[in-house]
Length: 332
Image (cartoon, rainbow, N blue to C red; front, side, top):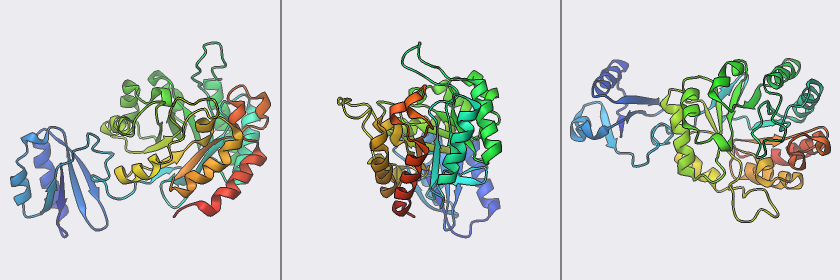
């Protein structure tokens, strides 16, 4: 349920209304926009007398929200959320580009790549320190050492770092990480999401392999229910029946749909979606053209020798070419 307040409502009146709502055992999400203030009621709203709420002098209208996701709902928060990350942002006027290796392999490798992607226009450095792999025998990442190398690359280039968390017990290692990524396999790891909700760090939430948009937004809701509203959604392709030519199916229709449903920023990962470096450029261009707030692209200085996902990784030169192609297509 939401209550849209009348223009001219004082802060004292808003505070009084919030106190009354909370006394009914509900929590409140307040969205103070330029033209209107919306009070979102979260919890069992059946205990609220809707007519009584509507009759208050400061209330313009009262509406019930049928969707199960509340805090992530654009009806609760009409203005777009801008997630601040160091000196840059996601969801604002800057088109965010997170680029770097699928897996951090060495200090020299990640620093070299960081310099190259920054020179081409990337706004953040992505790199895997912990790597979830289908086979237990594949390279699992350098873990804490990998985070150390990412932080060194940040010192050299100034790029904020994005890296994936696998377990809530690892949170102490992520204190200096700028954006914590939740991978597709952990999208519905609800205990992990609850822990991330208690942090204030930006969370990059990737769509699950077979997850619906509603399920994806409900995972974001888990994080927001804990108090952390700094969430970036990432479309990375969904599993389908045809895996011969592409790794996944990149659901670009999700971008405009999400912009209708939620205020959270949405970026696209064409690398994991397609699984083929030659397809990254056209899909990155398509993502920019359909209104994505940014991209996440895998870049490796020697893809043929990469320990993880070499076939979908771009060389620094290819990445620079993609950046040049995407720039004219970015929607403001």
